[in-house]
Image (cartoon, rainbow over all chains, first blue to last red; front, top):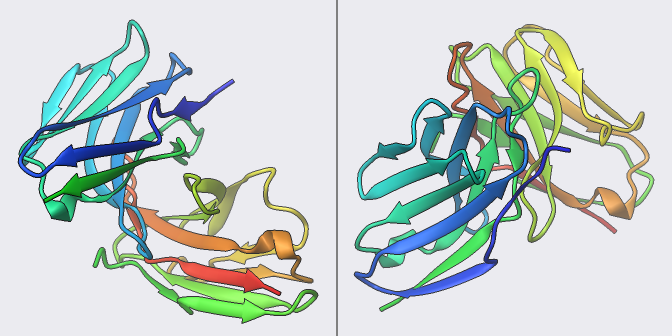
Length: 112
Length: 114
């Protein structure tokens, strides 16, 4: 069945270091993937997305990598800042009408 | 602020009561989604509208739940005879029709059923 999950529930990094958050998915037919950031008490905030015909996409300080062979998705955050502290979710655009299927999330903590 | 608003932000109710939540999507978005999120979990899809038509409902949406989007703009989600297991964050998202499905989420309504 369809499932999206994350390898690590928590990640702690030093301010200024790079962060890598991983995600595995099981539906090889999925063609759209999204990373969201959720701060405490707020709704998920879109970070970056990628379609299955790409293997890399870059944004401002963030890069998403997609490895379809092993069904793996990662989010790289360069020069991590305290404001990056949040829970990060990967989501799969797998529904027939575009509903998103979310994984459990990884909590990123940035140490000053 | 994504432009999606939800009201109320918090709701505390007693078991057995009915509650109704409202979502105002981004005005030009014709797609509207409801999700439920419990502590430590990712959001789970409940239902989806395209304009005023409710096109898909999750198995999570029991018969105590009903959603409407009468004019294709704002939407309401009603829960009848609330149970303690209904306690969660209820999130609304909207998107425009297209190849990408970039969904913009509102701040959510946190429901606590006592």
